[in-house]
Amino acid sequence: MAACVDKWHPTHAGRLTGAIYRYLPDGATDRAVAAAAAAPASASGGDDDDVWDELRAEAEADGDAEPLLRKYYADLVLSRPSLEAALAAHLSANVCVPGALPQDALRDLLAAALAARPESGPAARADLPAARDRDGCGRMVHCFLYYKGFLALQAHRAAHGLWCEGPSAPAFLLQSRASEVFGVDIHPGARIGSGILFDHATGIVIGETAVVGNDVSILHGVTLGGTGKESGDRHPKVGDGVLIGAGASVLGNVRVGAGAKIGAGAVVLRDVPEGTTAVGNPAKAVGKKAAPQRRPEEQPGVTMEQGWSAYVI
Image (cartoon, rainbow, N blue to C red; front, top):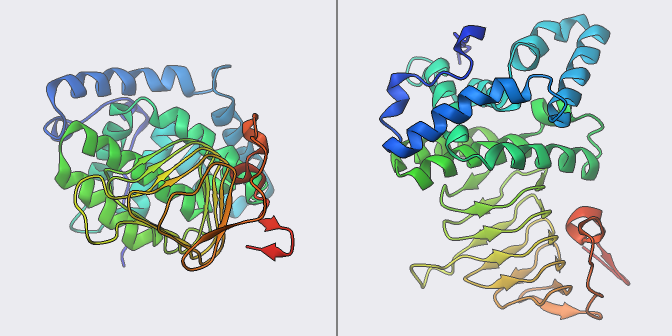
């Protein structure tokens, strides 16, 4: 497949093209324009954006250490005025279709979608250190450039922004292309918190009415789906700090309480109480209920502690 050509220029920063305006209602367009215009001033090296500053410093260090990477890092990170702009550029390079879905137009669509939901930027800034710290990535710039779980999640945040503002067609477009490119299928309507890790990511499926809390880690092959028997609110609700093992399926409008662990390959059809480990098909609770974890950093979704006594996820 031919390479996509990005026509971005520094003077384009913060500008939403007229072609994108029609995708958003009037009020949303005004908010998106204001947010996009403000992003470069607040995120291009200011003291209040430590994640972006660290990511840029890492990109500069990698470029200095390996000349082959200098242009790549410059194009995708160092020439961009903010994390949001860099995300829009990087995602558009991945999901564009030469001759049918140009990268520059897609980049502007992504920028508008992220700007329309102000929480998308802080969420991405929480997702990056989560990927670095829990997955042994080492550097946030490597998570940003090379981790498809992180990229799939950010593509969903953009699709969700479009979905919430009304235009379902471009939201489904982003979902479809992200699914094809990253192997992660998340309905644009799903609500996902911040500090999320999709570990390995391949085969993750999340349905329309699913809700995922903060500081959750989900391994590859996980399904948060419906049972096929219901309509309306029909997908799982996952609390903060939950860890879901590889290949697990959580089906129906069931609740997984904060700090719970779901074992690899488990099939969850009923509620899982807070602090409980559930394993098997159908899933059942094992061991004693864990004591409430008052600090987020102690939750299984953050510690990635996958063992329970003799049983290991």
